[in-house]
Amino acid sequence: MKTKTLKKNKVNVVTLGCSKNIFDSEEMMAQLRANKYNVVHESDEGDASVVIINTCGFIENAKQESIDTILQWADAKANGMVDKVYVTGCLSERYKPDLEKEIPDVDEYFGTRDLPRLLKTLKADYKHELVGERLLTTPVHYAYFKIAEGCDRPCSFCAIPIMRGKHRSTPIEELVKRAESLAAKGTKELILIAQDLTYYGLDIYKKRELAELLRHLSDVKGIEWIRLHYAFPSGFPMDVLDVMRERDNICNYLDIPLQHASTRMLKAMRRGITREKTTELIREIRARVPGIAVRTTLISGYPGETEQDQAEMLEWVEEMRFDRLGVFTYSHEEDTHAFNFEDDVPAEVKSARAEAIMELQSGISFEGNLSKVGKTFKVMIDRAEGPNYVGRTEADSPEVDNEVLIPKTSGHARIGDFAEVKITSADPYDLHGEFV
Image (cartoon, rainbow, N blue to C red; front, side, top):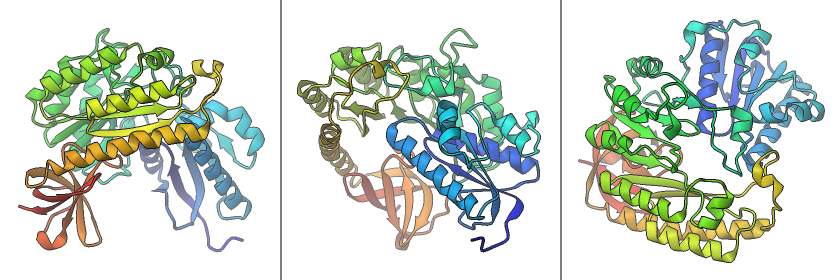
């Protein structure tokens, strides 16, 4: 039963999935705001007449969360709590006919490249002059910064090319303008994202130009940290490391998803690299940029994965001692190359293998954190929470990495500022410190 009056020009945008979806929602919200809509992000007020759900379709858990969210808002519509429900994003791009059949109460489904059509449905104009403008959902001092869309890689397990299309780089000059606009509004940290950062430029410049892009972004006044996410290991452009070493405002941090340690599994995954070459690459990265924090993600339970493959993974994680690491359990995705194989590793085995890797990584992370006790670091203050300020070092990205907890009793800080913090103690995934 409807309990309050709905505001006809108010839109609530709900975002699921990765940072690339957050970026897309922020662009959508800027367009809606320019069309005089009162737009909010994941509001609890319950007075928006329109809800737009930006879905994820990457792996099974993410798809289920998206479906559950769609059902929740379809029920809200049926009960008069909202007037219209629209669905966009990856799940909608991939499964639109099925969704229309199974959840018909949604007013309309849109794909990942349908923003102009979604706006038209809302009787709003797509304003080309606003391309790149965003209504940030993150704190203003950091922003996800998408430099390309889509992916040309042939990874056997991944459905992203199906949902996002071929790789399309955004020109350097346009990205510099976007960075300048963000910096003028108070953004200090750019978190570069794409399906594959290291492919940047091949489509429009006919060569890898991530290093050149970094030089230009590094020159933008007001940008103090630039962080790299989602770098593909095969064909990694080593000149990126030279720029990282030369420029103080490019973080000594690299997110490089490696997926597995077994050469047999890497070949099956169509990653274009072996364990030996991967190991050599990581060692070269660390040699060229001493002290760099390397984050990676791995997959447990790919079809045909054996106990020997798992043993290789554990041995390799111990050997490489990654600064940050996450594990996905394999998700059997339709229309991918791996869908041709039997999903033959039981779910409980996938989970047990992932847990074993994370237990090993917990000890590695703890040792790394203990080595920081007594040292002083530049920390970005993200928020105040209870008795503490919560911040991050150069080695940490928001949401996925370690945090630094600083008691408010040790001094005052402003959200979004940098502070010198001496580390006093450590947990496996967090640091504790005090202002210097």
